[in-house]
Image (tube, rainbow, N blue to C red; front, side, top):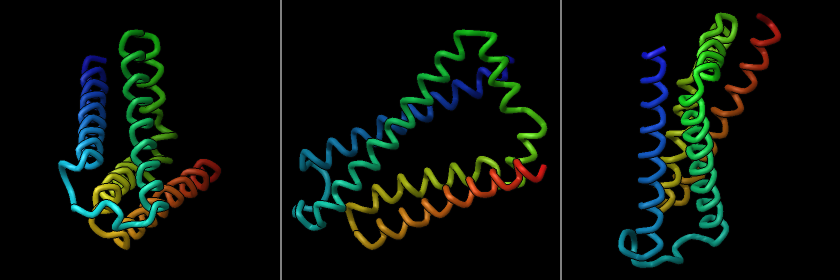
Length: 149
């Protein structure tokens, strides 16, 4: 269990740092300290969508950070999560459907889309579409293999 606690702590630190970096970057961008001089370079829809993605990523990070922090305080919950993550059937389903790497890549592409959106709107929409495709593909594969296996 000690090794699993370290894994959860690493997850908490990575999500907290990433969330903080995204928040600082957004605040700097909105204050005008960083970025292009013309703020009206993209449509309001694009800017709103981008802000929504930032809020979504922050909510996901906050949710998982608080969830893992609560679980670390309760040994019985820690065991439950450990067994749920290391269940052989679910592990096989995750491996067949691309594992966590597809989810991590989709999140990384989504964060990259947020950053790239400040420079090029076409790249922003392309990366959002790619991320959406990865999320949908992973979910479909998870559903398929959970029925098949």
